[in-house]
Length: 342
Image 1 (spheres, rainbow, N blue to C red):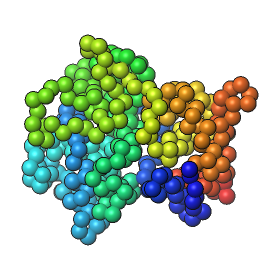
Image 2 (tube, rainbow, N blue to C red; image 1 turned 90 degrees about the vertical axis):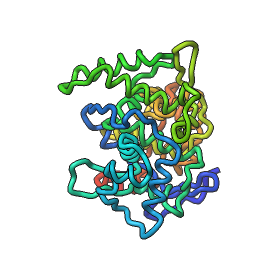
Image 3 (cartoon, helix red, strand yellow; image 1 turned 60 degrees about the vertical axis):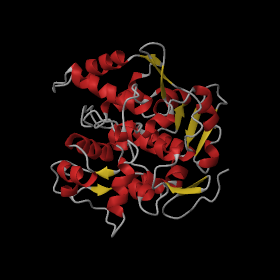
């Protein structure tokens, strides 16, 4: 049951025993969805994200006199290698995952130093909501941050937003991405993409070998979400379903971001759009139709009346009350929208 909505500048949503500040937990995909296609492969150096990488980095950097700014020298591979006892490639991988999961704002060749995002400080600071990454809801938030980062984590974005096959093998995913990037001026080899797909699969399915030791044996946190499983032979299966552990506030936020990305911010969005379009909760969280409808039946409650499900006309859709939505979640929106709703 949701209650205790704040009328203050930052809207808070009560989820279980945790009060989460929406605008501190997420980075809007509004600008991303407006971008021209941009592709990137291999910056992870073939290492999936591992338990301990984000947590240890944040703990180390935030334990003393905390500052959102991070020295660029500290993120150099040789500095990370020395501090954490890692090889150079693994150090580069950590820097990539911090950026791809929106833990850091880190722009290469910029005069501005990298800095922690609001999401990172809210969750992983010493007094944060989940300092040791023990909650599955935090993993969902990291997953959302990653798969909406289309210009940095192309394969992750492509699978959850574009690919849409339920049963597939790695080569099918490689072929589809390779076909798409072949239309660009930049040159990408099939081998580049295959390595990216291999890393993606390991991120959600885990390792297929049992002979790894130490840090190599740590699974990626995304395995916990059980979004992809092994099928028969070389096949893999996307687990569309209820996703019981998915936080309601993250589900709501994905809808707000999808609404923001649509031209003119329409007053209605069909259930089919929420199920199948890029950046939709159906795609990003692999929700099936029944589960999506079930969550939408409660959205009036946890959006404080800003969004309601309407099935009266025979076409299932949500009705977005723009003024109420912007008023209730003001800090999430571009300033020009906030002014128009005032």
